[in-house]
Image (tube, rainbow, N blue to C red; front, side):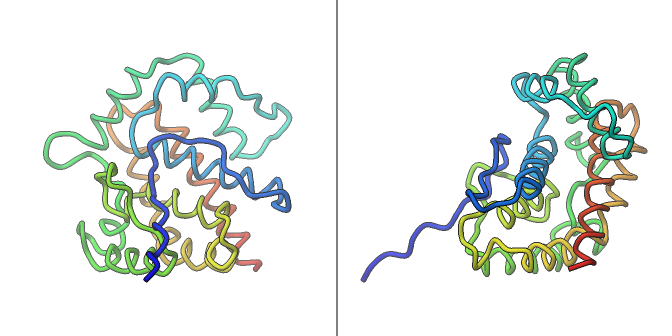
Length: 217
């Protein structure tokens, strides 16, 4: 008997450029890259290399949208901060001792507790996509970083039967749309939050655009 091919791993350790193929739209490439960046920033505090890559980007200065403003704020912070500062804020708010200041897990916001029914449903969805969590990732699959990584795959993966607009819409609406604003509120209201304020704003505005776009499908 032939062995089944290995399942793709959801590994959010670094945000590398997504590939959508020659027929992929530039807009889809940008969406995939932004999901990948958010996954990296939420999975762990950014490395100095990632901060330097963000800082070296050229934001559109004539773009007056809130999303562009959030990106410019993130670029400015990346230019004027060090990875150690980001790590301290990340650990204080998202890790902590005992209960963190902010949970980044969908189950907490959708069901009120960790490891609840939404996590089970997300795992079933990943099975249908042929995905599984990487062994190096300790967070559960309902972590916002992991969900962003799934969306990145559904946009930029090379299996058109899985990576398509229909699956993007279903996954986003079922497992991200109902709670991302509450999560952003929690980040913005966390004590001594500075570096992750534009990250939360970026999530809020990008996801709002995604939701509006999916409504038009």
